Image 1 (cartoon, rainbow, N blue to C red):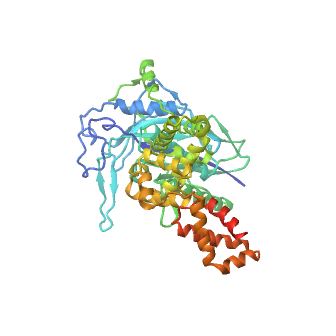
Image 2: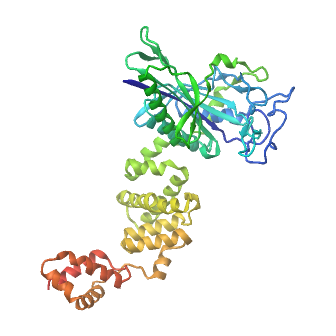
Image 3: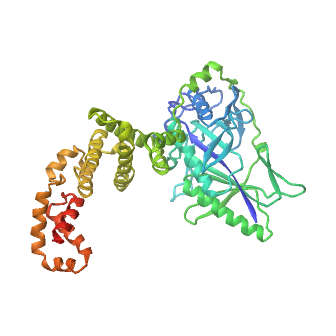
Length: 500
């Protein structure tokens, strides 16, 4: 009955050496109110200066997302009072942001971007549970903050969540933000409205009524600190607004927060409009001019973007869409994986083989062990790939041992676990634990004969047609060889002896 219309506003703290308009270090984790100066505290008579590095990183992001870059831009004052805003206004951008337009594709749909602008962050408020006081830490005040605004064209919470995750990945690939939501380095806001079908249309980035229809106002979901919470908050709002509209109630244009404990949105305040902020050009900062030469230097810093990386992994190594996505998700995981594959390439070349003939098999085998097995161990230990004790060289050797049949799957798991916990050379671990796969048919046959002789009842069952008993004998042989026998060879020789 209703169309869902969602737009996102996403803030991300930039990785710069200093704050946005002063020389204080861009470091917020120090003792409260120690990383401050008269400029970021808004003392009278102080003059801000623009952080060049922050401008460059903003423009680089815009280029990555296909935005139009305004080479003549400016900063503006956004006036409002809040305890964590020391100046009583925020230096932001209003009508001429650095980046306009562009898009980001998620779930096979291009989500249009309205703008990306640069501003300064506020301080941080805390509310001690045993006191009625509120405390403010100004270490974060004045740090550079990106804001991306999408067009109101997202139609479901799942796509909104996917957009945020993809955008976070782009920020990390470009190395312009850590975008760690748990640390407050990235915050999402969702604007959502429900409109009766046929009463609205999308034109020039705006939702406008058809004919004399009246639109329902949008609700802003403020400062959400996880993608899961964003998805849940939007889902809750869809249900809440649907019930209200079905009852004939009016939706208020308000700002709401997400309460994780009650799993519902809660009203915070009536939403402001741009007129309430009384924007005007920042008088203490000159306009910013990005010359063609400067823009060219910024473009030269562009890196391979996630979707191009995923395509390359699929084309070069024959990875599935899912495996390519998982490997490309984390730049550190990607670098480690490609180092392992590079070691495998060197081995193939050294042994006079053709990488073109072996690449799909070896690359897919390596990725399978990294994505499925190593990631499982890392998650269990709550570690990341850069904390892994296995060097790319040793993992490549391990992959080759599996590929060449030197160890079976059981032995491989045992060796891998030792490498995860202690590191080390897989060949040495194999020799120490006696896990080299036994392919000697004469030796395996002797073991089989002894087991068959000791288990006459199971032999009789097999001969009477209960062929599944062979699994019992395979298990006995594997136990006798400490898992080192080749299972395929064992099965072949068992059938031969039992059918005599």
